[in-house]
Image 1 (cartoon, rainbow, N blue to C red):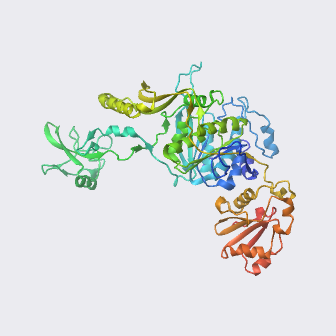
Image 2: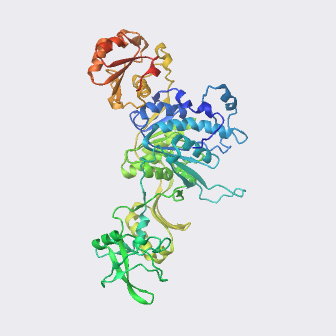
Image 3: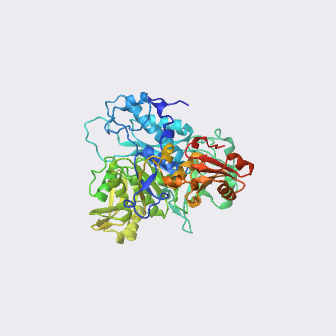
Length: 608
């Protein structure tokens, strides 16, 4: 596979490994509900550090990642500020902020995104999927980076989102109206995708049988490409008509054609009563023509998701939503629309999915998750990371308002119907008008007005309410966190860094097993962290320097025996500041306990 090369790649290739762990520090005053690290999270801090800090809790548990990184157009003024301790790379990191005149801005952008994607890859579940919005400036480089990190075979698709739906009066010859949405799976063979609900499919079923079921009849003879007998000789055979004669597929010009299905399939239709015969005139005489009857789906009809998205809201609607929520649209320049993220959630995030956005911005992802849960009763969770100083006043504040409700002056619109106006629609205008009338009868009491407009070849029926009070909240809680001081393991016993037991335990468990510790199984009272692959992990520790110096913090023979009794047939790894029993004595007495001194033996733990 072709690799992408950029200046500094050798220094950032494994930079994510050297990024220190920072504990997540909840701020009870800025969240909603009781603080909990296993619920919805909004994290204020550098996203590289935040992603590393999430590993002990969420490695391999994220179902869907959506990120909207800097597009690197040259106008954003973003800064590359990762602390890569290599003299050769520091020389070209000094030119911040990065602008259009920076000849190395594309290399710096690649160096910025590389370690973040490495960590996001580790956080994804095996069936997890990642979506990234990007523009023309970095789309090809980002695709190459993702192909190298995820494998080109895991490139699901590159979607095109129409982000602009209003005329652009810029004095230029060409202006982009779209963004790309790159989609990569952790493992495409087990990735989970849903189909798109498409009520318009029912339009093709224009007939009803005696029981009221919608159906359509499809010609059994194949037409169009590859429709001749020589194309599929086995599909040329006789089918007995109501008069007992064999009918063969013949085109109107007399050429031998073929059926659209095999003889066995035809017999199944005959047995089911869905082989339908109709009299037609062909070559100047009346003959029987076979059709197969297909009934409309009983459940919501679906179809594959298209790769061109012109049917979701644009940035204009996204800004209008921010204006409704905050009373101004000047808070964020390029917000993504809730319906765009809802499309992604509908595609791959089930009712209990965990969705991560490490470039959270105006919190559209969190808003979309809450809205999706309200619509289908799901229990999806979100993790939002934002490094800018507006993390509290914009990112978190939006979630506070949409979850609890907010004051609003103006019109609230709900789209009730959107149909393309086609020739078929015009021919059955009465049916369409009846559908609109039905909507008015069903929903008229819920809205102050129901408007009907035709725009860009589509009929749009919208319910409008004049809002002068408050918009109802979507519900949901979240915990607001900042990043604490890094857990510098070498300084642990000096007292410079004394993280809480559960956070240090999660870090050590991840280091020792490459897994995440299950929060319910942790027991601080007897120092039990968790189990992975037949090995139990323990941490004898308290965030108290004086206690750590006492014999209570040491692994003794009696304590080792108690630990082994927890599961005598398994291995036990015990992290502690000291021990009063040798490894040889433990082995001689058949006690399957291995001691790992804090902090010096962390990287000598046998993971085999």
